[in-house]
Length: 129
Image 1 (cartoon, one colour):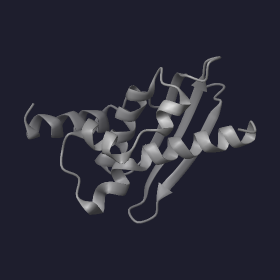
Image 2 (cartoon, rainbow, N blue to C red; image 1 turned 180 degrees about the horizontal axis):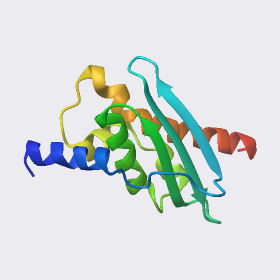
Image 3 (cartoon, rainbow, N blue to C red; image 1 turned 45 degrees about the vertical axis):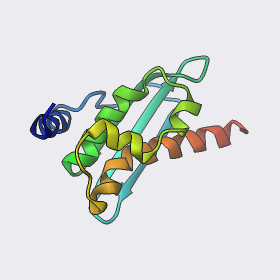
Image 4 (cartoon, one colour; image 1 turned 60 degrees about the vertical axis):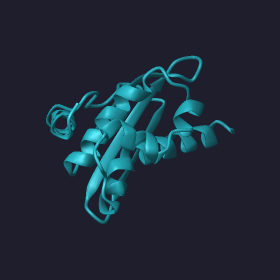
């Protein structure tokens, strides 16, 4: 794929985000924002009996990078364990996006991952882990 094709891939996820909306009975709910640019992400996760992501939804507003990267993230983590998700890094997100991310856009690109990982942390704390 060319750089233009990757940009179009990001715009497709921004215009028609995957897994957008809310879940009826989520196990994990967390939201946060990037106060520097105003991006917001709200994530809800339903887990199966082995703590794997059975379903995930998000809502948000903000720039194309923050919303597209969160949309891509929701596709990538379905079926993953909480441990696998906690091991993800910003480099994983950059690899999924496949375009150069300027230092000023790093927080935009990783906001969804940070929200998801914080939600997992709160979920595990409530369960005494």
